[in-house]
Every structure is written in structure tokens, then in C-alpha cells.
Image (cartoon, rainbow, N blue to C red):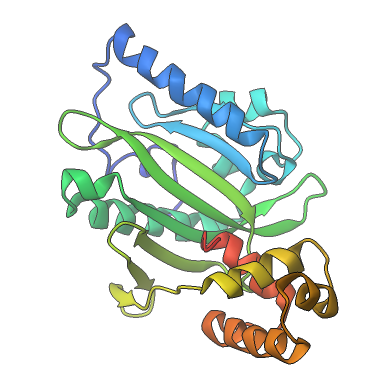
Length: 253
């Protein structure tokens, strides 16, 4: 069955009854998103579930697929239908359905502390699909605690395949993964890095060698090697490049 535009909004019950004053509050979030987009390499955009549209789209090319920010903003969810491969479109619909079902069972407070993360392919300007990671977090709810405005962050995925669906709350320190084979959410260990491990990842991301990092942290190279092994074990990766990408994706810094 073909995925349609309205399929993404069927699980959402927000009604368009917001006033001009309500949208003055939204303007502050749009300005925040614009400022945030200037400080990160990631793509930023805002969804308005009431109007079934995008309120803001940053100029990072990863999400644009060769279009301008204004063109993508005007298209809204049609942007997905035009640029996501058919197989991944069905995956996105599945994520949308199970994600809103999970969200619906949270308390009003928890709905504002949880975010969902998942991977799917997005065709780039050269026509080739790129596996991206997509994070979504509600930032405003309606009077019935339904998601109204959501902040989305898009970056290159550190995984090999689409999926990797996770719901997490930094406040509660909990993370749930959706198992596509069993069709259920499973609580998973919440990865935590020690301050020294975070330092090593940050210095590695800046291009410093192990010797230089050891000098900066006033420790031996063997100590740096030990911490790197711990990082690789926790994140289940094989290189510092993978570790850095995944740490950014999981917001571990």
C-alpha cells in the first residue's frame, strides 16, 4: 500500500484552534531554532502538527536533497514522499505509528522530556540515498497534551542500516529500543561516558593524536589506550571515528 501525506498525521489529534497569541510563543522557538542552526553542522527544522507543516528549515544540505530551505519548508511532509526510498517510507510510517503510541502513554511532563531517534535513507542532490539519523523532540503541547510543535535534528547516521529506533529521556535516564521483528519496545541500558572518556572523544574529534591527548590530559599513552577500549566497548564500535559519530548522535557529550 502506498504511503500518503496524511498517513503521518493520523495518529496525531491536534486541532487547529490556536490563536495569534499562541503563535507569538512559537515565534520565540523559531528564533531559537534559527540561532541553533548557526552553531551546529546538523540540519534543524520545526514541525507544526496543527498545520501539518514545517515552520523553519535550516540551510544544512543533508536534509535539503538539493532544494532550498524555503522550498523544503513549503513542501513540508511532501519532502519525505519525494525523497525517501519506498522501502524506507513504509519504515517511517511504522516509526510514526509506534512512536506516537509510545508517546501517548507518557505523562504530560514526560512527554516534554522524551525524544525519539531513528535512521532512514534520504536521497541527496546527486540522486544517491544517504543514511541519516533523525531526532525528534516535542517542545510544545496542546491543552490535551498532544504534540503541537516539535524540534527535529538531522545528521549523518553512524549505523549501517535503517531503523535503530530509540525513545529516551535524559531526565529519567531511561532508553527504549523498538524491535521491528517482535513489534515491541524493549528497555535498553542507557550508555554513560565518564568525564575522561568524553574528553578523549572531544579531543579526537578535533584531530588530536593519542600522544597529544595524553599531553593535554597529563596522563600516559597507555591510559589513553585503556580509556579508548572502554569507549569502544560501551558504544560497540571499532574506531574512534565511529565512536565520535555515535556519541554525537546519542548526545553523550
